[in-house]
Length: 298
Ligand code: PAF
Image (cartoon, rainbow, N blue to C red; front, side, top):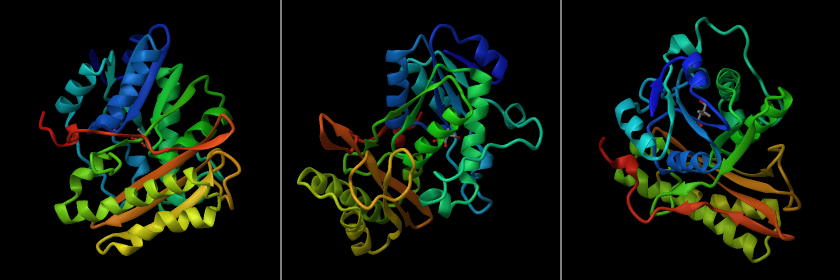
């Protein structure tokens, strides 16, 4: 694996079908599953690692966001990465950007509503990665469901010739969706956080036994979080997979997204519901059978 910090070098090292895994680092099995998918499908696997200030509000955790380049480099090399692109701020944003990317409509509710400007930051940095690395395929986790909708729409609107691949959520042993921010949770917060995946898994079960009402699915997702002390629900929202707009009922591919705050940590989870062979199939992702590498030292 080569670690480089310029777009020119990252692009020069790509040959054949180039698969890009955009990340902000502090890797866990969710990131590794994206690298492994890219390894199976591409000739060159490039992982970008950049904690993007443009997508953090001044009140958010940009300064404290976990960073450990040596740990991360070792993990993605083992997973089959060819190129680790870890640019400095001056490479990504040589000047205060006068050109940014803003994706309307799909960014209005849920995370977009709660974090104004967040998706402009995401769309801008992903557009820069696509322009600078020219990947054939790019891999994103389904956990950040609204981000995936936004990136798909931006890619279509700006005619990037990059196929967008959404990969299943990876969950810890107790069901909590993996996030680099899970390391912030103390034991009591961790216990409270489990209520999120309890709600999500209950939604999947309800879909399997025929529940189709958006309102009822939102109620099922919200209930365990609302019943749990020490966690505050931001939203439980049932939306269209393509437009991220609210759906009254399950009549198109959809996802139900939950966001909640535990202490100073905001957590997201969701279940995508796909049309498979004429039926509705919930995708709750995969569950680890041992503690996550998130808690392992380099
Ligand atoms: O999902 C993330 O880690 C980030 O939002 C991304 C896509 C790498 C853009 O900074």
